[in-house]
Amino acid sequence: MRLIIVSGRSGSGKSTALDVLEDNGFYCIDNLPAGLLPELAERALIHTELAQPLVAVSIDARNLPSHLSRFPQLLEEVRARHIHCDVLYLDADEETLLKRFSETRRRHPLSSNNRSLAEAIRVETDLLGPIADLADLKINTTNLNLYQLRDAIKVRLLNKPEPGTAFLVESFGFKRGMPVDADLVFDVRCLPNPYWKPELREQSGLDAPVAEYLAAQPDVEEMYQDISSYLLKWLPRFAASNRAYVTIAIGCTGGHHRSVYITERLGQLLQQSLKNVQVRHRDLS
Image (cartoon, rainbow, N blue to C red; front, side, top):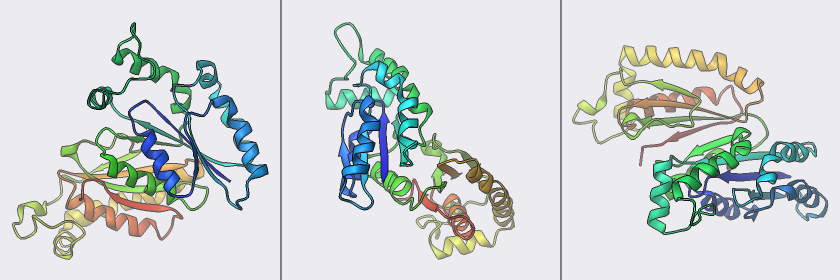
């Protein structure tokens, strides 16, 4: 059985996450009382007709505070049943959450006549702290649109074929901000930039002319060798420490050329020695 617990502050994308999981064969339950989590897991194990049942539940601030504070104990009870369980926590910065509520005119579940939206968001942060602290995977949705969030969930959660550490090598552009959920960040902006070559500007690091240009630059090869040596040495140590997810982010200015090229090469290299390595280009559309 595989169980995914989805949580996060209101407006961060939990409904989208459940929709993605439901579309991929999970039986989904929204706003499950946290205290029922062990019982749900037990019933799913005993009564399901599926050989490999897939269940996803959303647990959020609509729960009783006393149930949320007991989440670490409840999660331990579930995992004691030898259930493959992942905790996904979605979040966004406060300004983005305020904007989303303003645009949709939705009411925050914790707001009231005596509590503003901003205050409700801060209270929610404290209530969900026990879940956020135990999250196996955190996705910050501040800079993600609906389709990017769906893609991120598919890549990180659904492409994880077996228990163990899932590694994501992700390119990004600093001009759109660093990925706040990255575990390791490498800055390659010091390398020669194909953007300044008119014939290469509209291409990306996935295109052969750009790759050939960068492969011919000594600094690029030296940077690649240094990063790859570090990752080959230390990523197995991350896996040995029972980390569920590790994100390695490679950044250049726009996220189209240098970071994409380095990310592709690192992904191909790491896939030769690690079981679950995924590659994603955040800013390449």
